[in-house]
Amino acid sequence: MAQKEKLQCLKDFHKDTLKPSPGKSPGTRPEDEAEGKPVQREKWNSKLDFILSVAGGFVGLGNVWRFPYLCYKNGGGAFLIPYFIFLFGGGLPVFFLEVALGQYTSEGGITCWEKLCPIFTGIGYASIVIVSLLNIYYIVILAWGLYYLFQCFQPELPWAKCKNSWNTDRCVEDTVRKNKTLMLAANITNFTSPVTEFWERNVLSISSGIDEIGEVKWDLALCLLGVWVICFFCIWKGYFTFYIYKDLMSTLSMCKSANTSTVVSSVSQQVVYVTATFPFVMLIILLIRGVTLPGASEGIKFYLYPDLQRLKDPEVWIDAGTQIFFSYAICLGAMTSLGSYNKYKYNCYRDCLLLGGLNSGTSFVSGFAIFSVLGFMAQEQGVDIADVAESGPGLAFIAYPKAVSMMPLPTFWAILFFIMLLLLGLDSQFVEVEGQITSLVDLYPSFLRKGYRRELFIATVCSISYLLGLTMVTRGGMYVFQLFDYYAASGVCLLWVAFFECIAVAWVYGVDNFYDAIEDMIGYRPNAWMKWSWSFITPLLCVGCFVFSLVKYKPLTYNKVYEYPDWSIGVGWTLALASMICIPMVVVIKIIQSDGPLIEVTLGSRPYTLSPSSYPMVLDPTP
Image (cartoon, rainbow, N blue to C red; front, side, top):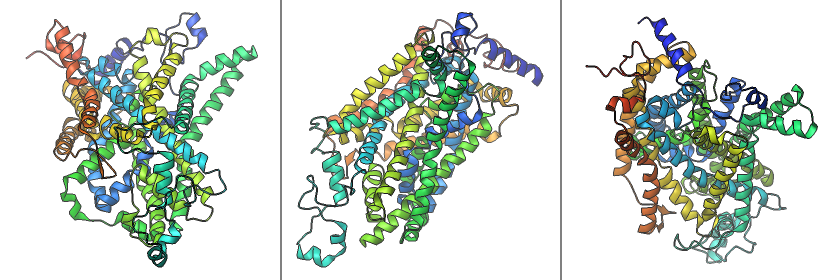
């Protein structure tokens, strides 16, 4: 069939088969519903809305505290070699695949697979399990950040001195540590820093192990409640639902003029623009401040100095692969959900490439901001940079706060840092929760999109997640947090989902068929690199990294000292398998439930006797 006829067939398919799910969507106008007009899925008003939402979603805490540490740990500049291999061979192709899939089907992370490749609907369920568990523990980091931010508004930063109620006799301030004579005179050998004691004894009040959970720390519980309330209202009253704002404003003012909608839409969009861009401004300010500090150049050299011998270690490649999948927020259903709000003719390919550059560029620049400050701190303490370089919460809540306490105007820089941390994390949390909600609502649109049921459903999800998260703000909460972080949303889970996404699109649905769909949307066919990645490169990278991750697996420890008991390791693997088992389980269920041939189970109830040349959604089952 001629290409023109083939594309026309594709348009007819998209119009007739991939039509929006019934029911009232958040963007459905009441007047349209009253007039009986067909419900259409809400769409972004401009491409900037999509770009900022995605940027806010995947440019998060991992860019600031994980990538720089991994770069230093795995050979400095040499780490960029496996990083870029996984970026172009896995991260960008899967990211574009998910966005294009959402845009083409106008569906969330579960129902998009039901329409495209029903037998692999388990991919969507696996993604939802991962993102649901991720949303429970990721927001705890923001609760810690909010607590630190509140503590900044004191005459003196509480982690700078050893004169607080939570400090022990072993607490030694940095001015004393620098003076070896004073250290020997005081006979201090086993000492701790005030910032470490503030983190472990005041913020966490950490217990001896996961067996001793202890009571809830209500100061952290209130901070956790605060960030969940912010998250709830930003999704309920956020950009997607400004029509609800319009209804409320109209009721209060008894006025239904167009001006109300314009004002509310404008205010809502401005909030999105500020929350998405402000962290980048803060990062640039901290970067400028960092590189002007004494000792910054040594920190940057430590960050980038290449050690090519490290490339022989499989763990370096595992770290590169998992970092890519984490930082691009793929395999969570969130990018598919955001893509589903794009207009059908939107050029998602171009903007996905731009967003990929923004994401990886932010990670790279963050390394300069972080290690310039660590170089300054190492010089001030007279120690090696390796002794102060940390990753994860240790960097955000120990190393960096300690560094800013040594700077002039420490309170000012501490406030800037924790505001940046909160906004980076909140944007990611918004997108992940929105992706979770969109995927679940699309499963039962006729029920959950009526009236304010969607808003009540969001409140229910947020409340349940908050209650489960309370286990992580207890005295043993840090152990629970690490258990979730190590297993529930691990690289193994993400690699598993990414592998099956590529298999479903490239080998079951048909990579050429998907390219036809993309061509119909954006007007041209993407570079063949995407096709080859989905078909061969990404699956091979996922399998290799997956196998090496299992071979190099080490049981979880806390601070490289505390070993988790066997029962907790079992709980961790249960969290990991809860998502991974969804894919094979749904495949088996679909086969058992179907009375037709396997090809019909795979492709759904479509006219599967047609070949790809005449019908863009199916494979040819005839010999």
